[in-house]
Amino acid sequence: MRKQIAAANWKMNLSLAQANQLTDEIVATSHSLNEHQLAIFAVPFPYLLTVKEKLKGKHNVFVAAQNCASTKNGAYTGEVSAEMLDGMDIRYVIIGHSERREYYGETNKILAEKINRAFESNINTIFCCGEPLAVREAAIQNSYVETQIKESLFHLSAAQMTNFIIAYEPIWAIGTGKTASSDQAQEMHAHIRSVIAAQYGSDIANSVSVLYGGSVKGANAKDIFSKQDVDGGLVGGASLVAAEFAIIINSLK
Image (cartoon, rainbow, N blue to C red):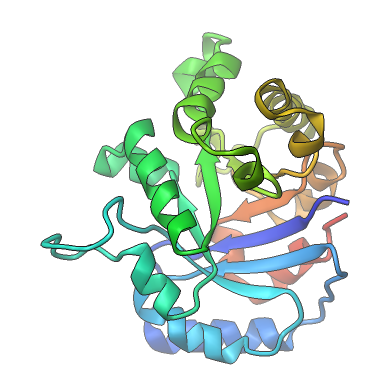
């Protein structure tokens, strides 16, 4: 069975004291993970080691960075390289979140380079894709997302794509309270899998975990995750509430 994943994206939130409190509350919540299930916490850079230490020894629980640089090292003030993350034993990184694309001008080509840097440091990527509202209203979301995937991922080898993680996030549903219906999520996730299958074959496509992101909550997670091609979620606001995120973890297939 594909990995089923509840990934938390804290974004640029919480003081250190609040981050410590939330982590402690998450550890104390009632949730369990089977062998094929993962919980991943993408926390702000300054908190990576602190949260990692608090989650140490927890079964199938990992810490992720929210971004990494497209270059290996050099005079890039304020950037954090994949090599640095590797040195801290951070094994996951989010690449291509819509906020990085929109606010920082990250193109599909730049994201391809970031993915390369992550692979060079043996860091697993959670690659984000998704369409804005205008694209959805024009009914061209499938081709839009397909282009994102092809331009950022299709230089990878079959081995690199095996067990890859993709997060589909309709931009119009991120932080808006709007959520794609479970049927809309399934439709896009199936399309993403078909795009990968056309390039790499069905076996590899069926190994890829495709997560849904966009106003996932405890109240709707079970319905969304129940769909055949939805393998969990990349969760924003609800991941900042320990009890809420525990419900989302327990909603995994």
